[in-house]
Image (cartoon, rainbow, N blue to C red; front, side, top):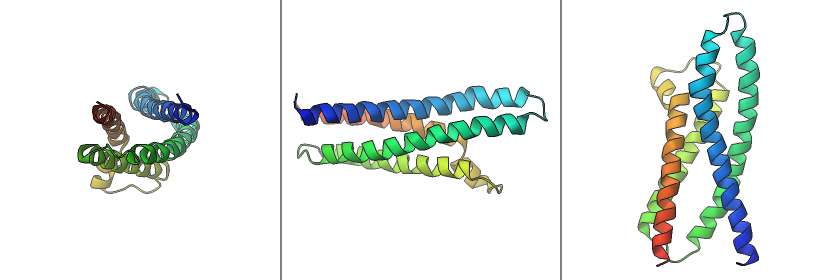
Length: 152
């Protein structure tokens, strides 16, 4: 194993951890935090929500930065391999588009001052963000299988 292989392994691990933290954090936020906040006394909800949302927003921002940088490096590494085929590139493009959508949704949720339209709420909701995260993780598995198929 070369030095470059070790660095790429660390980057790949960092990318996977950031994805797991972000998707797992979204799952916790969606399934645990929101229902718990709804049970809190009405007058305490804004203060609790603000404190927890701020901490979660910071975590999300770190994950987005890590995912964007590591994803760029990993994409370059894979695409410089002449063996990747059209199926790999197609899945990769879909995954990148989903990631960009997820980054936008995270941004939109953090800046939501005005009530958006019904369709905007659907496409930029926490549930949408969670679903996109699960799809992105599935696409990551598909990319691994597609890449490993080129090695044989």
